[in-house]
Image (cartoon, rainbow, N blue to C red):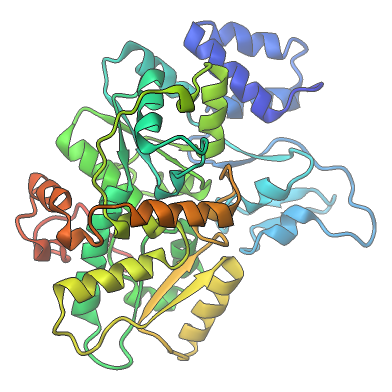
Length: 425
């Protein structure tokens, strides 16, 4: 590959795709038909197996005696093993596509597939509306002065029809989670495991701690809710989720929710795209249109879901005598510990929230700024919202009506629509 990195290749392919010479650029980048380089190019171009997120493109050099494989240590699901020659092998049945192995691999042997290049023609010809839906963790990721309005304008310049903050649909899921808690926690000892919004947390429960499935709230993630909401209002649209998480690429392809999102980009990928096509979000004019509440905005950091649901429950069910007593797990290790304790019957809360990345989504492997700084900015953005809970947010309530929910109680399982329902059992 010479001095080219995987990210360099992606940037060059983005630029050539927009300018109309993608095939020539792919050939030019690999004149000697190098097999490893071909794998990098294929993955950067979004080609190959559509279901595979983490790709192994080459073998690592031998590990010195006494040292451990960083990728294997980083994988907390035992999905990375060594073959008889000492080479890394990914066990696809155990892999959650969390991206931690990609984050620590110092040899660029493990990479995550990019999904942007196949979208370029759609963005260029504008015959199909393509919506960008952006994770609540976006605040300050693309520059200190990049507001949601500036980011929306930059995405429209790329060719997107519009941008929706996923926080708006996190608001709706907050209402649903509050109602689910009200329904299922009736006495001391009852508890729920929230399904919003971390795919690693959900994957752990499904694959390792599946005896706890009956306690999982039957809700889709805000990403899925947002994708389905956009397509309900714009049936011909394509939807692209943008966030700091690699695991969202895998979630978007799960059988029961694959209708919601057509592609996933990480924040790092979007920054590389902006650089390749010379778009600076900080220089864009404001294009504001968001109306999410504090509740939806703070989903981006650990504890945000619990706080949002607790405040909303108090708002819509003030007469309850059993309120939310929440615990949060910050990072995979804490998630595993907390779930193991629950499995053993050591129940010390009635609302369990788990975030696979330390700090929550702001600590995702493809975030652009430090997670502590990001959490502060997320809180500031949450504090600036006009409504504290979705129950007070007239925009959320009106949008729910447009989606077919006349009353918020219709969000409960089976009462109106399966748009926001997921069956983990």
